Image (tube, rainbow, N blue to C red):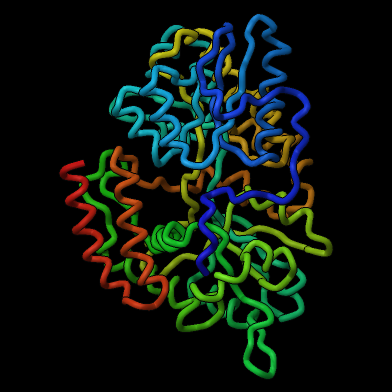
Length: 441
């Protein structure tokens, strides 16, 4: 059940043709002797191609502004720290919902409220068309340090043929119609198959995301927010009984019920490939898996919401996580006005329409989410509401400058629980360790 640790967007097979705009090699840095606007982002080849289409269209409409795209390698935060410490901070930065607060707290990011105050027409349009929870994700300590550019929340993918062959009812078709942990487990058991020797030939469930985030997503659906409050939290709820209950349920899928690969199994297998090849019936992941799955021959799939746990208040719908990347402007940029025009374009209706039609990302503006272009790019998905309504049915993870330190503690403490070596009740120790970090970040 532990996917290989390639982060949120593991590399998709195949490479997009980067013909429209040139990418500056990482080693060249972000500084430039010309008057080009530097745009720093992380992406696999397919994602880079989609982003460069946005860059190309922007330059076509703004021929006076040249954009130089700089694609990151591994270790994004370390690279940004190196660039900015050396006085070569890019003008426009791709930022992540869980780590941008560290950059904001260090003064790396410009407060976009300055531009919004001077551009009331765009400000009003953006506010009216935005999903509030996504927009608010990049609000920190009174400043607006980025605008969301895509939604990367998680949900379930399921193999329609395998469900039908097993006589298992299909999952709900939208976030407002929930199924329970118990119903999910029953389905996973019915969809797990073994040969005469007991070897699994078809898994009921696989995880294609980072495992401790996935376990925490089950906790969200058991009624427990990750932190109190979300921004600059003073406590993370790893020690909440309902949080531990959900993590234990998630770990038991592999270690007790044997409906999902355990830690040793995934050392020799790719969980996305298991689903793509028809050897897994349900997969947890986000939209970045779409390109992999549409390339799989004979894979008839759809999407569904996550199940809800017994501790989630009655009447509350299932939820995803607010997974999103945003665009920010460097506080040290010498081209802030040009950077503002680019950020406006990429996060506005035209840039978002390009994103929607690419079928690589889920856009963040309501008007584009429900556009014909997005629907056409996802014609193989019948339950499109899982995607179009996903941003509105998402709950945020903690926003704190200490997040990278917390992740290190999560990796160390949640790993044994997910491997079945410790019970979820041991997460009280993780909560205490995180509290110490939050008190002295």
